[in-house]
Amino acid sequence: MSHSVAVIGAGAIGLSTAWQLSQQGHHVALFDPRLNQPIETACHNNNGNGTSASLGVLMGHVFRRSSGRGWRLRQRSMALWPEWIAQLQRFEPSLSLDTSLVQIAEDDAAFERMQSLASDRGHLGLRTIPPADIGTIWPTAQFGALESKNDGRINPLLLQRALRLALAARAVELVPEPVEVLTRKSQGWQLNCSGGQKSFHDVVVVCAALASPALIEPLGHSRPISPVLGQALALQVTDGASNWRGWPAVLVDQGFNLIPDGPNQLLLGATVEPGDMAGHSPLELMRSLNDRAPAWLKNAEPIEQWSGLRARPVDRPAPLLEALEPGLILASGLYRNGVLLAPATAEWIANGLANGAEQPQ
Image 1 (cartoon, helix red, strand yellow):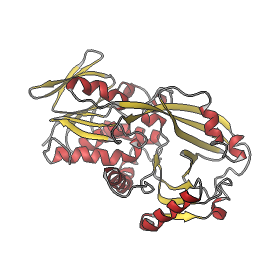
Image 2 (image 1 turned 90 degrees about the horizontal axis):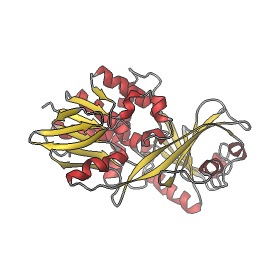
Image 3 (image 1 turned 90 degrees about the vertical axis):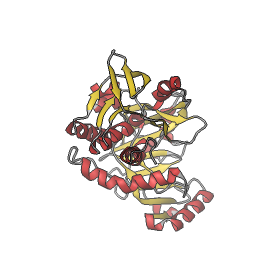
Image 4 (image 1 turned 180 degrees about the vertical axis):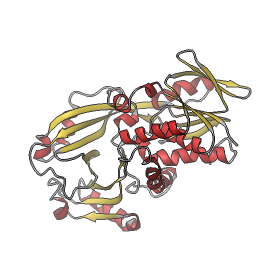
């Protein structure tokens, strides 16, 4: 059965959901004020959403837990991503899933946990790397590392560009205005936009990150979400080896993500602190990695910096995926995993509608 569906929010989750639903024959309208901006401007304006702060790191198989919804969503997304990439390359040929990912152990206990995880998940492509072998690319690694051959990174700019083009090919309606009010109707929902536009839909999917609580609170649904600042740097490496030979697609040390981005260039990102304002010297913290950065990284020249706010649920586990009431679905608060969980989240919503259920299963 086909529905008229409004998707609010055009980050990775909203774009992916709109694309998935349009492929199932639903009539989809996507609402977000950034839709009238080019992808690069919308993402690097230092006032962005969670996707804009993201470097697109996929940590699906190295997740510490081996059960629960979070694990199932990660595993499903990792299974879906190769197929999604293949389909979206029609619109953006440069889009790819870059592998692998290496996590640096902070101490002996961390390396022991990595050994246990690699033993349990060898079939998923996990293995440990002894200190002597990882030191060639990361000389401050004293305790070893964990490699995940199938985790890695998807460029979030290319992903959003591909999804926008895919939506255009599916004739999805793009509305570059913020939704201010949701109103229940006897049959469906009314959306009031800031420009005065009104539209009516059978189903509303709220993917608006930090703007989500203001839309659903008046309807009696309290789902508080707090901002967490994510920051990223593009760096020019001026000394040391910089052809990235032997490097993974992503190297993670103390929660900082380092991504080779061409000869002599590196991306460095992290979710550094709660709130919506940077501290006194977060960029210096990122470059020093808490005084554990190699000299060549400390000496690198910043080319560009940007930031965005990640949406973290308050007193609830991320993400917030639930049908709040008939025809009203919340898919928000994905915190640091919007790109990673986009396919599984979109499938979760689409399957529920395809099965004729008001609540996705």
